[in-house]
Length: 338
Ligand SMILES: *Cc1c(COP(=O)(O)O)cnc(C)c1O
Image (cartoon, rainbow, N blue to C red; front, side):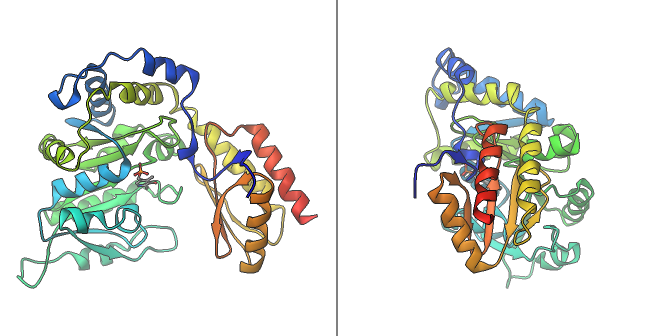
């Protein structure tokens, strides 16, 4: 594998811009474990206000944010319902089970990424002592870059409300969804008790996520963040990057979405590639497995970074990959197929 020149592996590869670094360097800081880092406090208040929630908590990663949310909703031996391919079930090293003693109840996805409402409802356990007690339903939006409908989120919220369950949103890329929908993040977040948002993906901050939600749940999360080793000290240096990100890098997500579409259209010119048109900044392509192996290897050898295996590729656009990178990558793709 040669050095990556055109990096479409993930939006997590974005590096802090000069403006963001300047904001970090100038950040006023204190000891956040004592609650006196003014920049962290400002980020938390800002995010709570943006989402229309009581409180927010700055945390080192999206994985910790989801875990803290589940630990706020659930006690030992309780259960959370999530999609079979949900990040908080499948891609977080089993943290809820290992660290929270919380049992997952995964549910199959329909082709559009949603879960069948009847399946969710049927999985909710009664008070019978055979069962772990269901406490929360976790949704994810965007889900693999796909925007799930607001009506779906509201329908799941209705089920959660009827059964007295909490509702969590893994909104790692919630701003991508809102930009694609033309919706205010406050309206998007409204059905949820807790929402986790990544600053370190398309928003371009180097580190950090924010868990936003109901005051009592965030208070519990603050205690558990300390327990998990996520209590940071002069983290205002990092929070300053987050503030810069939400102030400067939200509306421009539309550029990433436009570039993902341009990539999709360029790739779709090749008949062997089955391209799913992206809703946001993540593009999926399916192809014959043998072709996939050759094509993925070729891209790697030619400095195009993507993730792929078993005849599937994922391309992710982001603020450090501009129009010229898209054009250069597509030219290399054309050369492979010519
Ligand atoms: C990236 C991601 C996370 C976790 O974020 P990390 O900061 O990498 O731990 C959680 N959920 C979704 C949907 C993600 O894409």
